[in-house]
Every structure is written in C-alpha cells, then in structure tokens.
Image (tube, rainbow, N blue to C red; front, side):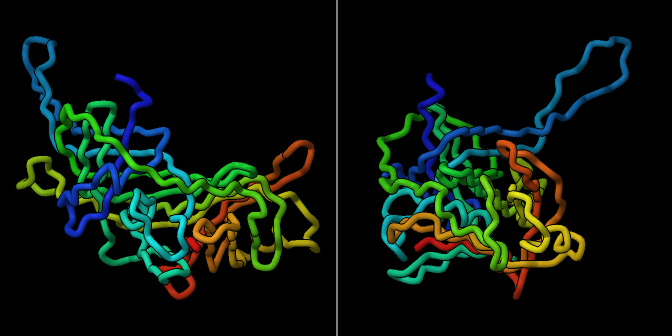
Length: 310
C-alpha cells in the first residue's frame, strides 16, 4: 500500500456521533500532511510477585486524533455552497457558525453553545477509518506568495478500522488565491509583513461514560483562546506605536483581505480586537523586523474571529 493514496471525506452530523455517510462525490477534500492516530489508554497490571516479568496490559478508553492541511479558498460561486467537498464542513465542526447570504457571501463566526460535529472518513490506501463525533480546531497560515493554508486538528470517537478501498472522488476545481495584495491592516496601519498565522485555539475535552464500549461518548469544545502571530518590519513609534500598544495592551482591529480578486473565491479574515502578546526583534534579509504573537478578543461576543468568503 502507498502513503500517497490517501482520501479524506467529511460531513457535518445532524446528531452527535451519528454517521451522516459522507460520499466521495460530495464530500472529498484535497488534503496533505495527514496523521491519523487511534489513541488507547494502556492499563498496567503492576502487581507484586516473586517474578520480575511483567503481566499483560489491558486496553482502556479509546479515541482518535486526526490532523491534516487543506487550502483556504472559496466555493467558486459567491454566497453558494458547492456540490463537492467544502472546508466549511470542517469549520462548523470547529465551533464556527455558518451564515449564508445567498449570492453574496458565506460567513463563519465562533459559537459558545451547541457546536456542531462531523464524521470524517480516512482511507489510508485501503485501510478505512470511520471517525464519528469529530470536533476540532484550526490555524490559518499565510506566507507571502503562497496560498492560505488551513491546518486542522480533530478528535473523534473510536471505530475499529476495516479493509475498505475508497470509491472514485470528485474534488473542487477552485484554485486558491496566493497571499499577495493581502489587505493586511492593524486599525488603519498597513504593516509590511511576510507571514501571518491566525488560530482559533479551541481546547478539546471529552465526556466519559462507563456504559460506553470505548469509554468516551463525546468530544467537547471546552474553551478557546484565538490568536496568532506576524512579522512586521520595525518602524518608528511615530509611524506605528507597536511598543506603546504592547505596553498599554491596546486593542486594535485586524483585517486580512480580501485575498483573491475573483467573485466566489475571495477570503477576508477579521478580528475586532487584536492585542500584542509579546514583541521580539527579528531579521528578514537584513531588515529589522518584529516577531509578534497576538491574541484576539471579543467585541460583542462570539465575534473575535470572522472568516468571510465572497
């Protein structure tokens, strides 16, 4: 079997943990850097005896961890969901609410109540992992001249893998825009940067139950701390007060985008309150830069990170 023969399908569940049966025609995603890892608790039986030889261990609670990368791109038609696999299904499984403004845009914002979940199918060549009840988090990674990438991390319920080959898949034909003319601003200032990362940073927990065969009945999103980092060129404080903003924990609006210029494939990322967590100096081809991690805070609530496709 071959490592490159990897297929992932994903579909939002109507009821937590109930497989909605994603199909290779409607739910296949272009992915890379896939890691699927069933995690099982190892229960030691460390009893005292005259022999130093170990006893067999037992297998306790089980779940699945999954990570991979996709492109961040539009649906191809503004304000319209596609008939093929769409990363919006994954955003919803990360606690992001989907709002469709028909013919105009699709917007995702975080929720604090009743986040959705997804079933994800992973075919490692002909080894099939069905992972229901997935919830996760993501980071948007942007590097100058490269497409915006989404790096996903999910946890889901354990189902024993089977020997099942995938059927033929249909993938999106939309090509992502590269990160040029990115429209990056902090308040009204346009920093000169070569990279930026924005992460939702959900914290995942689990609901356990002795009546469940795997011991875990639900993966929970228990908190989030959105933030990220970027590397602007250093400037005089009179040009932009990075140091004063750090010292005073000043909050300023973040805007990235629209990235892309074609209707149906434009992405804008915003946050109403960005605060500088730290500042250190860096070097970019002889230019003095800042390395700045930041956090994103709410304005009215459940609005600290907004992703809009138009």
